[in-house]
Amino acid sequence: MIPTRRFVLRIGGLGMTGVYASSLFRPWNARAEKSISVRGTAEYCIFVYLEGGASHIDTFDLKETQWQPKDFDVRTVTPGIKLPYSLFPKMSTQLGKVTLVRSLAAWERGHDRARYYLQVGHPPSPAREKEMPSQGSVIAYEMDRRRRPADFLPPYVAIDALNLNPLVMEGCLDARFAPTPLGLDQPFALNPAEAERFARRWEFLKKLDAPLREAQPDGLGSVAGRMSSYYEGTWAMMREPRMAQILNVTKEERTRYGNSKVGDACLLARNLIQAEAGTRYVMVSHNGWDHHANLYDAKAHPQKCKELDACLSSLLEDLAERKHADGKTLLEKTLIVCLGEFGRAPGEPNLSKGRDHYPQVNFGIFGGAGIPGGRVLGASDAKGEAIVDFGWHKKRPIYPEDLVATVYSALGIDWTKRLTNTPSGRDFQYIEPISQNTVMDVDEIRALWS
Image 1 (tube, helix red, strand yellow):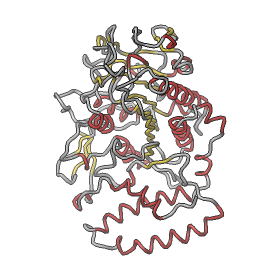
Image 2 (cartoon, rainbow, N blue to C red):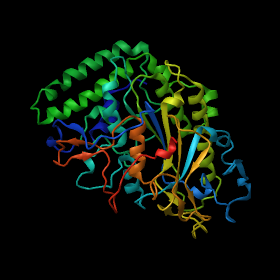
Image 3 (cartoon, rainbow, N blue to C red):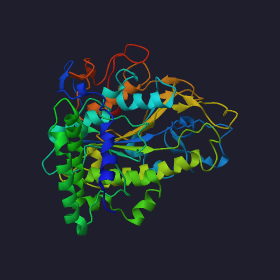
Image 4 (cartoon, rainbow, N blue to C red):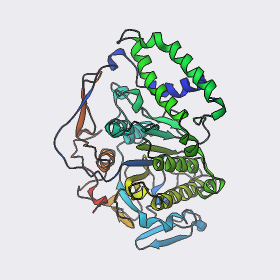
């Protein structure tokens, strides 16, 4: 398939979501609120997002109930950790590489607002949503100074997220820090036989758009300029011979990763990180965890668990075995985060045989970046209704602000920084101490590394 201008425009249009007024095109500056110590143990992050919210009591904070199918085959797979073995046979062997956190909580009960909170670390604000960048875009911006001339991959890649509704964009930052949607089935690898023809098209496109880029700086030319940065990045990928290798996986690999969309996404995430060619943050969306009805049907919760089991365990295995040029493993240099926006209601299933949203308790899986494995932080009560052990130095649940601060810290980013000179005139703090409901003393989850 030859990428057409329409295709590039469709993909490039994703970077336009944050463009809503000419006042957006003004310089910004980042400064720190105070001097803090950050980890800096990771150079990359893969965030596996369980879209819809997985049932904590039926997965990694397991509570045995009379409603669960008998074929869950609940086992103590390692001291202190029970899992439904039939759903997670492979992850049962990989727990030595990760730490489970069972004291997460969310501020929001609705999907859209909870998704936003998880990606930005801020409560949704209709007045400021379009200027607030996602954590992936902030990471791309902060890591830009480390970018090398030979890097051809976008800094922030979102996989299986072409539906933009749940995806937060670059906000007030430059378009080159927007999430770039990629997939194994997308034509970013240019057929060598078509290279000359496509080069002519590329030159024609630049001539066609030149009048727009030469327009007044505060007018349409600014928009074209932002789009131009996206075009240049796309063109760099398409003419790079290594792109074909990154998008190429074997049949055996796809089978090992589960022959699923999320499996393919994790394979691509692995290849992007291994390439060491500019990508710093990869968001993998695993859709379909919103089980309000028929939770235990074979094609519902059990299927999602089996998909996650295959891809996450294989990803951990591969990252632990493969090495960077400096001799460290990919897992040592990559922070792995896996969680959904909230948990599911404990106790008896609802009248539709499902579980509704439950922000009071959630779980997360963390690995790599120097995090010791084989541990559990925090605990919920016998039914999974309330957190009884917070598992870290703060005597409260771990909220989205703390999660985002932890990701920033692992990547060596000071989460107290703020972007000044935003379109609204109000500084954008990477993490604000004011949550949806209260004033917070936000901090990284230090216990992950101790």
